[in-house]
Amino acid sequence: MRPLSVAAALALLLPSAAAGDELDPTIVHIECSEPGGTPRKGTGVVISQNGMVLTAKHVVLGTSPTRRDDTSCSGSLGHALAGKSGMSFQTVSTAYDAALLKYPGLVDAPHVQFCQVEPRHKRAEVIASGFPLLSATGQPSERKGILATIEPDGKGLLESDAATTSGMSGGRVTFTENGTLVGIVSGVSPDPATGYPNAYAVLAASRLAPEFGQFGLASDPALCGARQRIVPTVVDSAAPWVAGDDPLPLGMKAGEGFCYLVRVWGEFDDIADAVEIALQDGEYVLQGKNASSPGDHGAVAECVRF
Image (cartoon, rainbow, N blue to C red; front, side, top):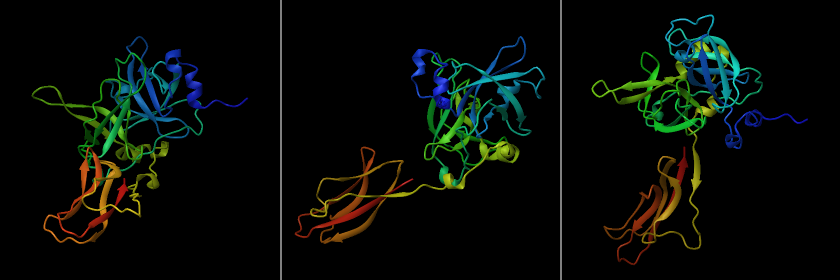
């Protein structure tokens, strides 16, 4: 018999309305509790092939400074309503709000690696994923935002505007450019005057690597470098673009990369003659002006995708 994939096996455990959904086997809905106590619900992210799951320490320990012997945790991959499996405790961070659990039975499991946050990541787009406490569907929620800070504070925290909520603690925060891990959801920083969220905290995975690297938290330099790919502009060589033609779309949207002029040609014999790259409806275009002089001029552009 052909073995089922992790996602396919999980789909069999879901209600029919959700069974057709594509499940993400790297995100885990977690419940931890003590006998007779109220379960603490949170989220975790699979960080190794053998099922190590990174989550927030307060999800595992609650308000206790240390783990109680009678604390138990269970989890489900990809969906909060799937059947739960018991998870084994591994360790907690001595300095940060992070803990490691192990999901049973995983071999060669899909998992997420982290990238060090660098200066180029200021205002980088990120996605925070987790299971909101009040969700009726059991599906993970994905909230888009940007990194507002790039240097972790004393608690290892970065700031983002990806609006997370209760139940998403421990959930992954990833770069949209390559899907690698920035860190995990670690709460909200309220405005002292209003009580409203001032920023959303992300515990940087790079700060956890010294403690959790031995458990599989790893970074792959090949994934973390700036991804640049030249996107050539397709122009009919028999009728090249000239200034005065309609703006030429360059196939690159703002935030996806940047565009530049490779070559400028022709006669610029009027002070109003120009060629430039501009944004039009969120997409880069090549545009220009040609005053009523007889000579034509134009340009060739290329774009680099991040």
